[in-house]
Image (cartoon, rainbow, N blue to C red; front, side):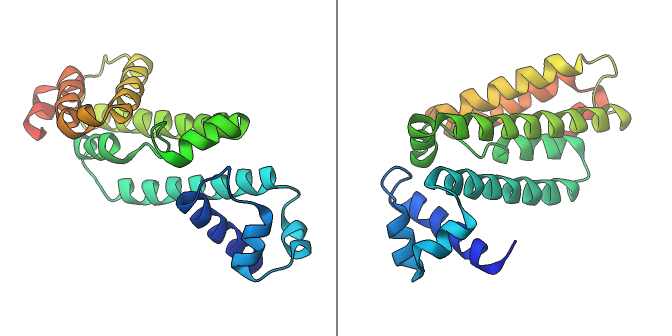
Length: 187
């Protein structure tokens, strides 16, 4: 990606976060960057295109950082704990997520789809690794466990009380339900 496009995306994300996705105009972004609209439109066909590319880029960066972090955690149970604490990027109660959902539902839906694919993939890799290491039971119904964990993650993150007070409890509950005796010692 060229430097100008990176600057535009970076500044746009900053403004979307500070002021709001709906309120920010292309003129405001140009003003903040000291850039002409012509230059901006050389990189993005519309505000919607700018929003889509900006949040896709941000999501991709989040996913790469997450993957790098999780690969340095060798124990699948410790990885699962990290997944519970950090895997959701979009949360409906977040101002930016709320505005994307309300004013740009197609973009929001696409981002959620990307997030869901990512989360399901890392959970599947975690379960397969845990089974291989003897920490999780070999007869675990992987797809069912994945759906269960994803459901818990979204529900926890939608409720501040659950997130603050019950996240560790849900992690332990899920882990105990799939762990072997060896895995239980790791909890």
